[in-house]
Image (cartoon, rainbow, N blue to C red; front, side, top):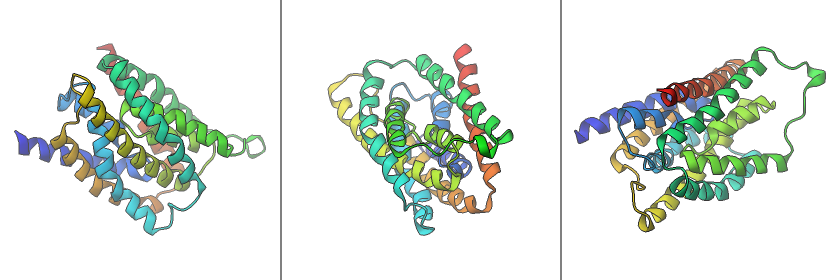
Length: 261
């Protein structure tokens, strides 16, 4: 079953990344239910496996964004510096306080469903120009990135799926948010995966990642991420905002249904 698992992981990772990379989401957040339900990865090993996926898949989209010059700018630095310390804290919380998959899914549902609905509503019924708030202050962005880093360390999602809808909903263009969120996801996933590896040496249980599945999904994400990032300039801003909101809402709905079963 080893090669079959690898092929399935490759296909799933590539499909997810093609859809999510244009809006700054690595796709790991959508890989979670597949790991838990289809591949039966135990908890909390599912979290470092997701982080491993991000580490392998991240360079695909980032390479494309770097070539277009989209990785330059202060937003990238703020998100990376804010999320890095948070992901370490989140990893410790995940191992010692939130090992159960039911609580895990419930928290994801409670966060992503209202966030997605909010972004869709803001896109379909935009605030009049005279009433729009300015983009978040740099310090606010850094503080938000720190909080999201903690959440990303708990969920194994890097944080881009949370930062993206929030920043886009506050008026930051998707073209600026997407590369910054993916860069943050890649950096925090490297730190988070290393933290879980260290914790696995001192803690009993399924903490180490599923290496075969994580690498296979990551290779698929590497290919799909590059293709998705290449598609982004061809897609209108409104479509990207609706796509990002719909992905968040769909994920929240999925986890709600799974939790209630």
